[in-house]
Amino acid sequence: MFWLAVSLPLPAQPLDRQQIEALALAQQPRLQAAQLEVQATQKLVDQAQMTPNPTLSLGTEVPALRVVSRVQLSLSQPIELGGKRQARTRLAEVLHQEADARQQETQRQLLLEVRQAYAELLAAERKYALEVQAAGTALHQWTLAKDRFKLGDIPKVEVMQLEADASRAQAAAQQSQTEREARRAGLAVWLGMPTEDVQVQGRLGSDAPLAPLPDLLAQAIQYRPDLQMQTLSLQRRQSETRLEQARGVSDLTLQTGLAYDRTYISPQNQSSGLTGIGQPVVSLAAGLSIPLPFHDDNSGNIAAAQLRVQGAEAEREAFLRQVRAQVESAYLAVVANQRTRRTLAQQTLPLTSQTLKILEDAYRVRARSLTEVLNSRRVYLEAARAELEAARQEELALIRLEAAIAGNLSR
Image 1: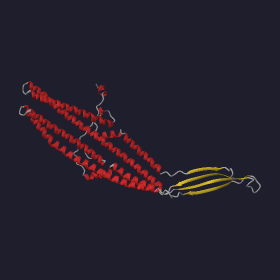
Image 2: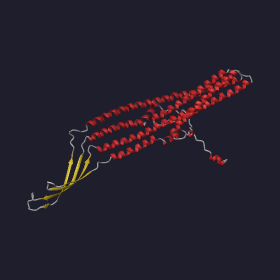
Image 3: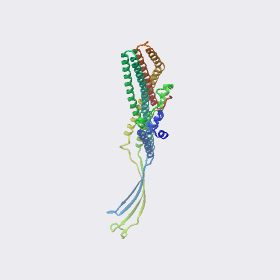
Image 4: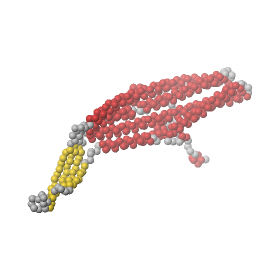
């Protein structure tokens, strides 16, 4: 028996929200791709800091009709002016910061989707438990009614009514089971786990007080990575403008080299009566190349970059308004659904449950009709389903609010 017990597979342990998030983030290729892009842009920063390479030239001139041959070795070095290297490096740094913010935004979006899938499964689990309980109660009532009918206590029509009620409850339980398995399969995809191994635990909604709306708005403005991306986009446009201005300044090219000349003496150009090769001459050459910006001073690219800066400023302002709207909408949804859930859980459900119990007890002694009992049970189930839906909507609103402020709320 011992070896049989240790050989049997252990049931999957329920996962809470933190465990769900950790598993989901570890299995996401999108997040891995964003991390690799951050590393790639760091390499661009290293590249932008490089200075231009020098150029080594080697040439020779062989005399044909000439009397002088030359072998020349020269070295040229471009000298960047106008702060090109600094502007290029700054642009690469901003691109690196954008990639880092994009990685954080990818994680924020992934957490939003995973948390929603987790909350939907929690709600589906609760709904299934509620419908199974209702189906069990209806089946029990039908079984008792059949026994009472055999004793002649109740008419056949009441047994038929209870049978129909049990059938409807069973159908609702089967439908909620299908919904639960669909939600489980959806979350299993995020976790990279078999569907049957996905078990969750937790609660829907929160009784913790919310922070004031202005504080949440300030947190969103400070920590939202997509808003940071808008700010960095503006800085990137500004860096591009600075780089275009630097490119409008012409670079210098410094050249230096050695020349080795030999003079050939022939009867046509001799003065001493000798023929052959004259004395070789080694000379040092230096020069400076300066482009003259008569036709192209890069003014068109500079003007275009400046206009893009203005466009980035307008886009950031529009996005800031969108962030505020998201925070306010999620906040109001949390408050409304939280109030509804509390009212249903603390007032409506206890009253309908107590009423149902009283009517069921009265029905057993034939003091109340079956119709009254069934109507009371319907009212109770409607209240229980409404409380569950309010808790579900509250949890989803809390998740949207956490995504809107890019942080976690106290639960």
